[in-house]
Image (cartoon, rainbow, N blue to C red; front, side, top):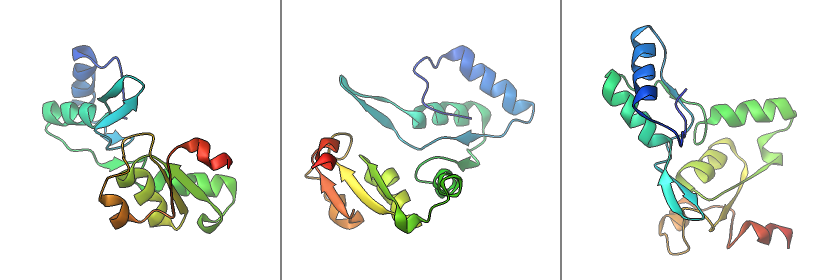
Length: 139
């Protein structure tokens, strides 16, 4: 499983290479290129995925997290609720909001992460609600 790893290094890359050579499958958690932090953006899962794909010559078979419906379908089943009864809140149009729309959830975009207010893709993706901050949910 390839995921964001703030301690990713050559040894881990070699471990992945050897595992794939022995038959391991390549599965990733998400395609995010960067992750927002208080100090700015840092590399996210896409960087680790690209490194592993480059050395193994294989591509990821499946992304199990956002925007893939897999993680959301499992969560809905575990909770015993329908997608139409739920809302997804996220800061990325291409993952959080797209995943929610694909499965029929209401979608709320918060502008405290990667997506900013001037992003033209907001109109294209059409979240149900756009908020400046997650704090606005309490109002």
